Image (tube, rainbow, N blue to C red; front, side, top):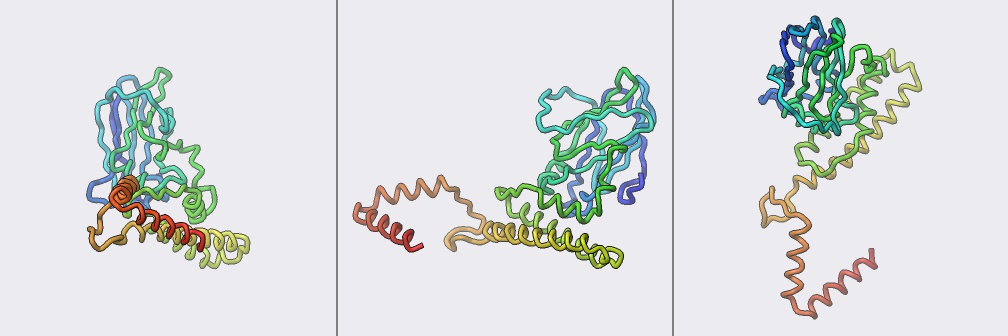
Length: 277
């Protein structure tokens, strides 16, 4: 338990099957999570495991809250969920966001609350069964290799590049993506400026290539972001939204009301413009 950003350890005593709910504070914005999501946001270690008593040592990020609730029946549909984990006394796990997952989606899940069920098993272990999507993961302490997978700056850059681009989100989510890319690019610049790293030619070349790819992705997202916030027509409000189905229906009404000669002229003008392009 070396993460300095987490709170002081707190012992949670459990006497029956229980739900742990990790939730983002309402007063915290999604942008505040960008730095925190570079590492784990919660950490648990089992300190007691008995049929009528379970003890768990918990540390969470200061932006989060932990609620202890009675276990309730839940759906057996585990599609898309993170896998459960069994721990004995002295063992624990960390809560990570999945590599390549969108920060907007991770923040939204965290704001809704990440619940995992804690129960005692017959073999004396404690089972932690996550009831949330696999965009967040419970990683056993002995399997936590993120600290040994290379510099964190390079790993974050690669995870952003591997992330599938979702352009159907709102403008705030796109701005969050842009902020994350700029933060990671800034971290890469500081990483290369370190004299101890500047001597490694291959490492500098890799960082330079990653920075160029991040810049291209930033430019692409910026284009869609500006299209999302610009005002398409001064006769409508800036937040006016009109989907393609409405536009097609409106065009069909214009074609019905307009004379046949006018429709023919419009079709011919469209064909001429297409041929020129």
